[in-house]
Length: 238
Image 1 (cartoon, rainbow, N blue to C red):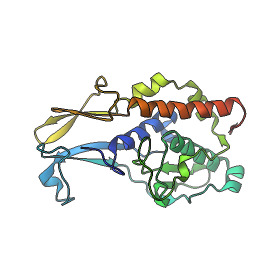
Image 2: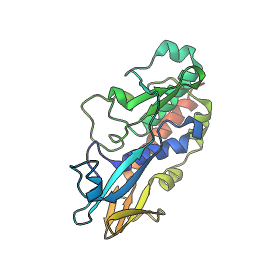
Image 3: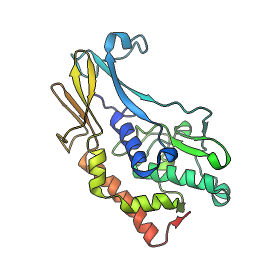
Image 4: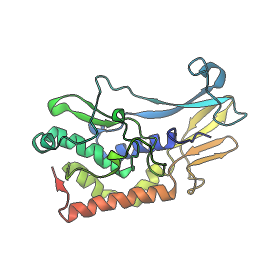
C-alpha cells in the first residue's frame, strides 16, 4: 500500500520538498530522495522479503537517497556554547531545527540527524524523516520535534515570512504521481490532486502521493508560529 509506520515514502518526499521550499541548493538539510519502481522478481535479488506495492501488480516500490560521505551523528542536544560562538554551526543547526519543527519530526534516533564538513562549511542533515507529520510517535524520543533554537538565519526568516498556505498546497499536495505500465510504476508529471483527504491515492493504474489538507494545514500553523515569534522578538535573526 506504499504506506506503513516508519516506512512512509510520502513523508520522506514531503520533508525533501519542504527543504527545497526553504533553502538554497547549497543549504539543503534533506539529501535528495526519490521513489522508484522495479519488477518484483529482479528486486528480490536485493531484498528477498520484498512484496509488491499492491497485490496483483508484480511491481515493487522503493526509496533511493543520496549518500553523505564523512557524515557523523549530531548528539541529541544542541551544543549551546558552540551555537552562541560559531555562526556557521548556528546557521546549520537553526536550518535543521526549523525543518524538523515544520515537519513535526518524531523519530530522534541518534543517527537520524548528521553533520558533514567542518568550520565554515559545516552542514546539518535530517536523513530519516518517515516518522513525521501525522505519523504516530516513535519510541526513541522526539527531541527534534520542538523548536529548540533561539535564533535563525536571516534568509530563512525572510523565506518563512514570504511563504503562504497556497505555496504549501501547490508543492506538498501532490508530491509524486505514477502510472502502472507492465510490472513497473512509471513516474508521470503530477496532475491535479484527486483526493485532498488522503495521502496515498490509488485508483486503477494511477498512484498519487501527497500530504493531506490536514497535514498541510499543520505545516502552515507551525510556520505562522515561527513568523509570530520573529515579529515579537522572541526569535532572533542571525
